[in-house]
Image 1 (cartoon, rainbow, N blue to C red):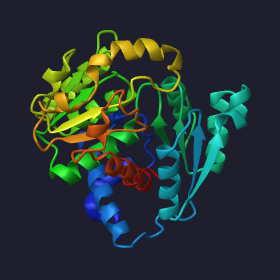
Image 2 (cartoon, rainbow, N blue to C red):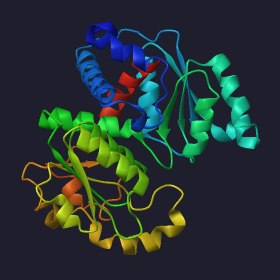
Image 3 (cartoon, rainbow, N blue to C red):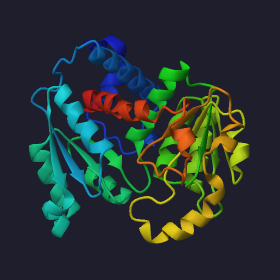
Image 4 (spheres, rainbow, N blue to C red):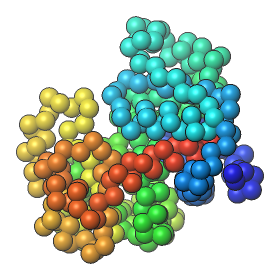
Length: 320
């Protein structure tokens, strides 16, 4: 098994004990390092090598939202690294009945080596990290989904061989997945195009930060309300559900607003012939994506889902 110090001890030392709340808190060098580390860890696992580098470590996993990929990948990742993952439904904790985030953070620090939380409010997760002396990893909030973005880039890297200069088109809701994806792409010098309906735009403040980051790394970020414009000559086409958890009451209105933003054969005809289709899943076939696309030869959604495991193992191995 590779050792952290064999790769880049300065970056590795900087990651030890570091929270992962947003990829804006990480340098481009740190993001590239984690992708490289994840790639190596995946190769090691496929070769049957899974040294217990986190033996004796326990990750507490707090869930306010339902989960398939996040829960399973973090739990399996800790097992493969020799550690233990503890599932905690927020409703079953005292924080679910009024204990302060301040008290909860201090108590968890006495028991755990790290905390992964999938939460409704990013502000609450920031507050938890402030009062927790062990690393806190964002498994999803209303603003960011950084672990998903790392898995996304790992998948593109595997298929395309490089990231810098590649064009990624995100079509749909300017949500947490979009925020983290475009920031990650900016770190790697990619060209990102985001197409959203009016009223569902990418967060304006985060857009400025992503554009500045992309420019620094030789990439770009543009936004539009025209899906065809965004997809033109894209190497990667990405979408997410139109109605996320907690937005169920808006479903009918969202179906109407997003009706022209479906990823279908007519739209992807404007992308490169060897484009990749990505989706963070779960997917609603024949809503945000046509079945012919998500189940077609250009779709890498299950490889992408599998890479959640490897990207998160890289994070766990370094911050814990």
